[in-house]
Image 1: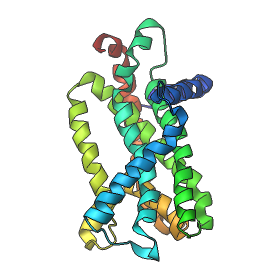
Image 2: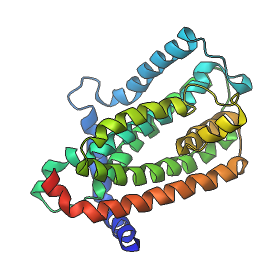
Image 3: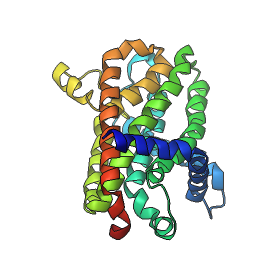
Length: 268
């Protein structure tokens, strides 16, 4: 177990320059061949935000959450990080398959493959955060001074998604049907994570169960840093739980990846 974690960490640390280049290339390739190119990093989330706002605020008449913020502002602050999380949840699961051409032609540290997908989408997410700040400011509301906590929640998302990526990318190679199951699970995660609806009014037991979702800690963290101004210590118990789950997921992902990586070339 320790050797597996050590190997994965060393591969990514020693190849960090290559990792950054691969992430930048993947980000550019996502919009290659389009007329607007890089602008889609802004336009795509704006278009999706409009769709979700129309469905939930207009169609379902979702009530404004606490704090007196308009629903659109509250939703945008949570849905932009979800776009990033969702892209990684889907992208890392097939990352080794998608990179099979390179892996078959040349020696390559395979642990870099899911990690570069996490990094590529994170770079796009940082640019998309400009949409969040623009919406909040244009609505006439100020940004909390606790916005300086955002790098911490950036780290939370990267750490969690890296462990997840190492695990699911390996499982998908070993069990191809897993991708089909995962698609449905991720769709469910969207609705049980406080992205487009607030969980504040739920009963105690149900609210506790939904808070066991580690992604809820990240989404709430964005809102509490940008809008509500809560310090990190406000949810310290949930933070301990999140990092425990993240550590277990990372170690598990490293072990599965290292155990079966020699079979990947034959299976893909």
